Every structure is written in C-alpha cells, then in structure tokens.
Image 1 (cartoon, rainbow over the protein chains, first blue to last red):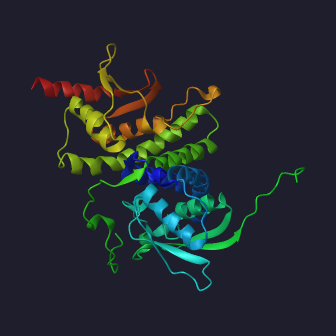
Image 2: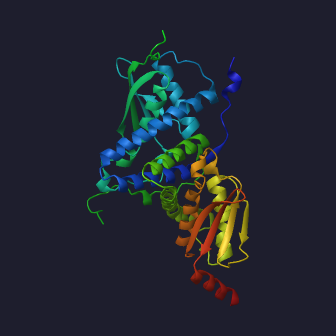
Length: 178
Length: 187
C-alpha cells in the first residue's frame, strides 16, 4: 500500500562537512565546559533534541507503520542509520529477556578524522547517537536507555551502542479532557 | 611525544580516505541547528552569536586546508591571489556543498576586497530568522571556513557574510597580500 513512498531522499551532503562541524562543536564545548562528564551529557542532550525532529523526517520519508515488537524497532533504526549516516550497523547481543540489544558500527562518519587525546579519555564522543536514539524513540512512545559500550576512539575494534527498553509511554491526556 | 611504550597506531598512520562519503541533508541541517542553538545559549547579542559561529567555522576551515589541498591539488600550493579565490569558489564549494558558488567579483572601490555571492547557502536552507534579529546570517559559519582557508594558505584575509543579493561573502585581504601579489605579476 505505501510501497511507493519508500523513495529515499537523494539530497546528500559531504560527510566530512558533518564530521568537521561536529568536531568543531565538541572542541568548543570542551573549551567552554571544563568537565568531560558535562560535555558528554550536553552531547546526549543535543542528540535528544535532534532525535525528536529526526523521527518525523524518518516517518515522512519512509511512511512505515507501527513496529510490532522490539526486533522490528531495531530493524527500523538500522535502516535509519543507513539513510542518515550512510552506514549499516549490525544488530546483535540481544539479552535473554529480549529487551536489550546493541548496534555495532564498524565505521562511523562522525569519528572519521578524529583522535581523542589522553586528557579526554572519559569523553563519550559518540554520545550524540545515544541521544538521537533516545529522542526519536520517545516520540513514538518508547522509553529507552541508550549508552556506549565500546568506542573505536578508545581503541576498541568497533563502536557499540546498547539500547535497553524500559517501558512503553502512554500519551497523557490534557487536564480537563476525558 | 608520548609514544614510548605505546604502540597504538595513530590516525595519521592510516591512509587518507577518498572523501566520497555522503550523509543525508537532514542530518546536517539538524546538527547545524543544534550548533546555532548552542551558540545562541551562550551569547547575549546577535554580534556575539555571529562571532561564535564564525569561530566554529574557522575551526572547520583549518582542518579543511590540508585535506583538500592533498586530495584535489596533489599538494601543490597556490601562490596567486586569483587562483586561491577560484579554488575556493569552485573546488572547495563543490566538495563541501555539492555545487559551485554563484559569482566572484572584485570590488570597484577597494582593490583589497572581493565578493563571493551565493543565492542560497546550504546552511541557511532550514533556518528562519526572526524579525528582531534580522541582521543574523548563519552563513557567517561558512565565512569562518573561508577565512581560515585563506589565512591558512598564506593569504591573510577577513571574511564576513551579508544579506545582499542572497548571501554575499565580503573578502578583505591584508595590504601585504595584495602588494605581494602585484609583485608576483610584475615579474
């Protein structure tokens, strides 16, 4: 029925512009806030703000319906990664209860030209991705927690973002209405 | 510096990527909107906001020089003024924004000043400016990039962005740069 609207938007931008812009922003933040914890939190919040708007863009471009379960959600996020960042992560490491999973990225356009110096060892550079996932899923009534398990910038093989389903959110009715 | 006992491969040991990666426009637009919001939260006036964006643009521009001179120009330096401006207008614009800048003009009044014009910069595409801040042009970010590229390649200049026929970047070179260029031409 809505097969025709799976055309992906062809307007693309050089990925290095995004890499360098994000890098300049992080560098400026580190100068402004002294604490790497604060910077990581700010990046997550920034990602959250982006995520709540990105989900609308995603739904407009793909016109998909509701996800049936968490596996479906994971697949949709995977295709969103491909659409927006041009990388295909692997979905893996499902927990026994089926409520946690990981995205494994072996290349990440945000960190292409980046090297973390020693004094910023605690910085979660890719926290913006965690924020985007959290923000986007919150707008479709899924409360999730997302964090970075492995980070290529810190010497790991690939970047792993773990997502844990907390609960389903109910739309709150405004006071005065039934 | 601190490489003793550490045999981690540094990022400079890996070969340079070909730079053909692409990311969706919405991703960049949302990231840029967050950048502007971040700068706005830390500024109290429009000129201060513009300065912050310009600074960020400069940070980006500094990194771009090595990257693109190595890739597009095979490492050869530009020594003529007009050539570097043409490089910025065509090659650099094309790799960053996917198309060339619209016009490059030399000012009639001041021989140090050039104008680069663009009808609709990519960064401004999804930005709406409120009426009380109408002097804000977020293309100062791009102006910062240009300034860093020009200054870093040896052509010290100041670049600002204005609302004129779309967006105009006013490039004002240092006197020393113009004098040096004239001497080169006379040889």
